[in-house]
Length: 401
Image (cartoon, rainbow, N blue to C red):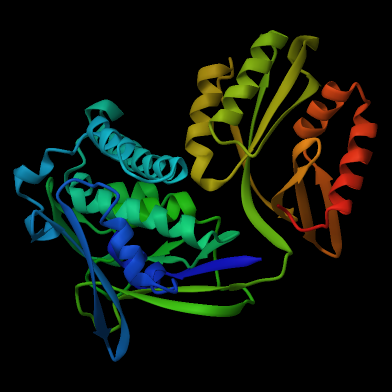
């Protein structure tokens, strides 16, 4: 299983994360050329070699109208794109895949939610200040492009060193981690220390929150590439994010959360609709169980299984689409097989096959929708369609088209 491990022992900033992943690519210069062609207004990416404490790595910088953006954080000229609607417009016009646009927008919505919570105003009224400037849009977009190119099966990060002391921002002097960063790192293992300064930025925190599937020590892995993304400041410890790409065994565990609510005053239609909304909010699984409730009333247990990054959105959907007054949360581990979807061209059309493995088990199963289509088109049973599809795939070889 292709695994990306991020060492955040000196925090995480958007530019450092991008630089670390950039070093994992066979042709970093080609990636820089691609970033400069996607259409972020006024933005030019450059990369330079950087040495910190004797370690060679890469520093990625973003110039806006020819100037380093973070050198002008408090210049109101650069806040023209600071609301979520403006950022959504910029992202929607980029020459990137829909997946990159979707991931970039999801990262910014996490930041918007954090700012909204911290400042106590609706998301639509949030102005992002530092993280709304064009260099942050550039960092988020570049990181999403890198993840699309590397395509790890899972992303693990170390506990995050956030630094200590205070940081000056558009709202004045704030404690480290800054409030929005602290909110984004809820449920993430973090720690401070002797290093004075802001080591984890809101942009870095949001990228970790969206892409990392598990936080903890580095797993046993066969490393193939290592990248060092360097920051701008110098400390006693090398100021870098280290990215390690390699293979781990197919066995996989991840931390998930069970969100549960009991209801006795919803119709079957309402429960079905709510379940759909919970899936759309990002739940891994949603299911219901008939239960007995107070006053001998029949009721329904509605339960959603979610990852850390989607927990807030699913919780909001619970309260919006069900009649519950409270939702319970249980943190638990999930053991899963690694999964990959293959596409096979057959005389029946494209058939997608899900291959799963791990824990000594290997499975291969055609997707239901493809089998149902074949069964309808040829007036077959589902079992007959499955048998014919399997024979067709095996006759053309097991390699996907």
